[in-house]
Image (tube, rainbow, N blue to C red):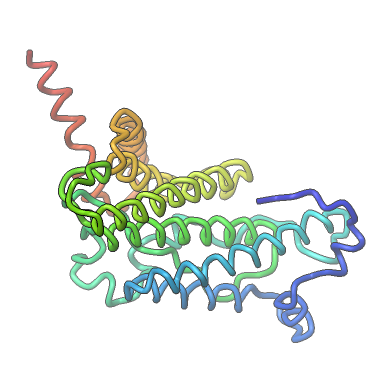
Length: 278
C-alpha cells in the first residue's frame, strides 16, 4: 500500500484531517482510528457486512494516507516517530482481546460459518486504545484493516449464498446463480485482501515476523475460499502450510485456540497415516 510521493514537501503539508486533529489536540495516539476500526468490527459481528465494507474501505484509504505521510517524513524525526509497533497482531487476536459476548464458554470463538461446516476464522481484529503515532503502529493498523476488509467480503459471500458443495456448482435456478456470481466475486476480493495483509506484515517485518497466529488464520481462510471456488490443489497447499504453522506453534509451547484449524487439517493427517499403514 506504500507509494513513493513525488513531492515530499507537498505530502508533508497534506496530512489527513484526522492526524491534524490529533496533533492540534496535543494527543499522540491513533485513538480515532482504533475507535473507527472497532466500531466497524461490531458491524461485522452483527452481520452488517455491506456497511462494514464501507467503513473498512474508508479506513484503508485513511491508513494509506498515514503511511504515505510517514514515507514523506522519514528524514524528519521531529514529525513522526519511526519506532516498532507497541502491540502485536497475535496479541490483538487472542480470545482475551475479544468482547465477552464473543468468547463466552469459548463456543463462538471456535464456531463455523461455512456452508459445509468447515472452520472459518470469522472474528475481525480489534485494535487497542492508545496507540501512539509510530511507523510500526501504522503498519499494524493497515494490516488489521486489510484483514478485516477481507473478512467482510469473505463472510458476505457466504451470507449471500450457502449452497451444498463448492461455489462453482450453480445449477439451482437463475436467482441462485446471480447470487452465486456475486458471492464468487466477493470471495475473489477477499483472496486479494488476505494476501495483501499477509504480504504487508511480512515485507515490513512487523513484530520481527512473529505473527504466527495471524498467519494461521489468514492461510486457513484462504484455504477455505480456494476450496469453495474449486481450487482444491491450492486449498490443499494452504492447509499444508497451516499444519506446519500449527506444529511450529506447538513446538514453541505457545497457547492459542486451534480446534478449528485441527478440524480443517485433519484430512492431511488421516491421509498420511493411511498411506503409512498401507
